[in-house]
Length: 405
Image 1: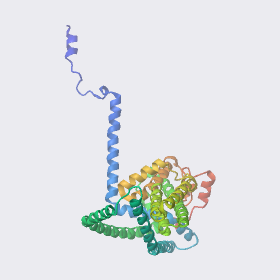
Image 2: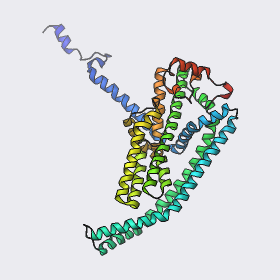
Image 3: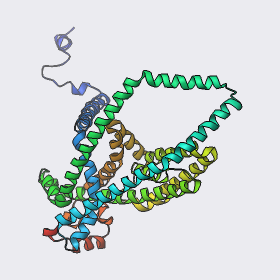
């Protein structure tokens, strides 16, 4: 063997300082790069979710206040255009909202108190019918067996009395947290309505200059979609409550007003809320009016839900906040896991804002933030609508001293 051949055989596999990247298959390099990036993104999302859960006492009232600001903001701005000072306009709308809420709660509590005797009477009749069916019907149970089952249920309650007491104390603590959150929400709402424009301008200063304008427009369009969402959801909730309430009254189900109010509140959680509250109405009808009455109420609930899904939501929500049903269900489920009922309530509005804001951030590069009117549906669309709509928005740009929230 010649000396050059022997030298080549004794030469190391890699020379000192040579990069080994070229020896790793390209597919493996790409997979590794995607894998570590995915791990970093997943860790960041987990940290964000954990932080939201940890600061839920602050974030939930803040989010609810933002929803209420989207609901009351248009009315406050209208009063401002009528030459009412913004602080006074904010006070008027908040007092009016509290009056409506207090009146509704008082009316519901009164209806529950008045309807409870009738509900108890019908419930007793239904239980007697069930008992008669268990004894004389196909099960052919004996009176002793039914009484034994009732005694076992009473013993179970007595054995778990400590647990029931602990749950009651926990519920009392929860009521205290709700009251604290209500006060905090009201406090934040006042500042959102009186100085929302200034708060948003301050937040945009933390964004890099080269994307600040685009970020400003995206945020305004996101809030515009939130305004559209709250308006449409409130209208849909009213229709659901009135439709189902009329049906319950026709069938003769007791506690019509409380059940209609429950349907109204549940409609703010799309899909799932309507199903749960409608199920409660059907259950009450089953207990008080029997199987036939429950079927009639079920048909009414399904009919109202179909009206909502195929006519009201597509017509009222519009293209600005149109979301796929799968995205809605997944968002509600994720919100329910992270923050319970409050998370389910806030998941879809957050998704609507992100959808509109991200689309605007990607497509609106040269839009003037001052031309985006958050109270107009057309302005919520990426691109700012047609050229005529943009011109109209520019002509209606508010005076800097009287900017709208």
